[in-house]
Length: 67
Image 1 (cartoon, helix red, strand yellow):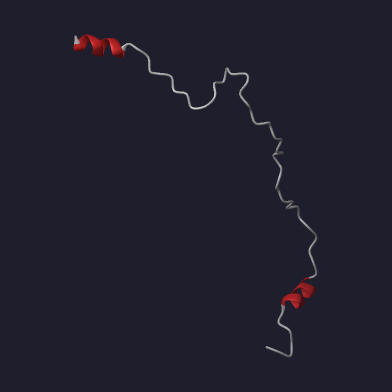
Image 2: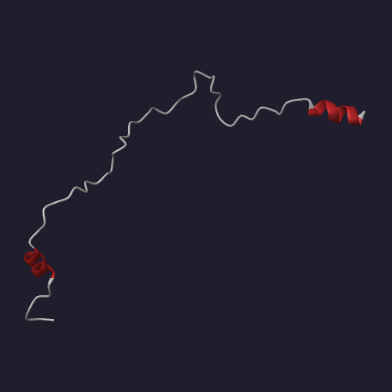
């Protein structure tokens, strides 16, 4: 009798696992789609003209007359 019950239970499918609302339920709420462009947040890295190096060095050099 027990062997028959084990064999018979092995033939049945697994129980349905329901985690959320059924996909077939038309009344369930759905979040609205939001458009996000692929290029959002990108930074422009195009080459720029060189700056005069003397002015740039003077700007970051230590000031004279004090330490």
